[in-house]
Length: 270
Image 1 (cartoon, rainbow, N blue to C red):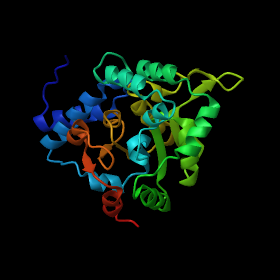
Image 2: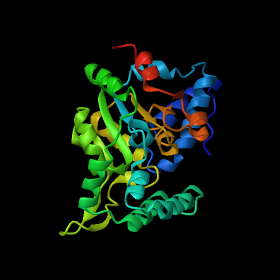
Image 3: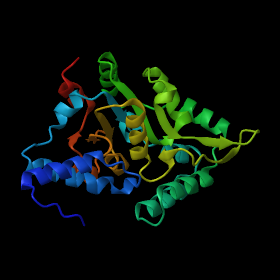
């Protein structure tokens, strides 16, 4: 513990705020505690967080994909398509109960499905992803205002890229899991080099984006707890409940919306 003498309470609070904001966090599991401390200190200083104003000032907006950009969860849809839904659901339940980490659960589900390249191609042809109502208009609005749009997902890059292209989001702005295949097209493994394959991966991606591009304000939008864990380094997290309402997300989000029209109207720039 470090004690600082001869400073007023307000000065000490300011100093603490500066320390919190200037931390280079190597251990992203600490982001949640830093976030709670930041909000508490801002409250002490008389500053209330205005998520709508922060959203309007964003120079980068990041969207989750499954159950946010898309109306469904791709891994569940793929499991059902491959007649592996029940087995995959059992692994998902184990992960939700804390018995295994995100990466371990993802690898286990993929090992059950073992989707080949031809499986994925047939899946996309038979069950093309559907965009959530209003999200395309919102992304067009953000592009019009020169805001950089990113997709950060624990889903699969190969299933996301076709829709990203339709939305004029370049491939380099898509962060998602990569699948590896053998020469004959059969499933080999999950590429664990992608941060989105592990816990707090979305926070790591946003931290890297801020460092690389110097963004002042980054917003994360999503339906899951992994999206809320991305704040910080994201400046605010917007919870989306248009496809599924998760009580924990609703309680932790800076702003919770049920449809993208609410965000489009709140942006006030289109």
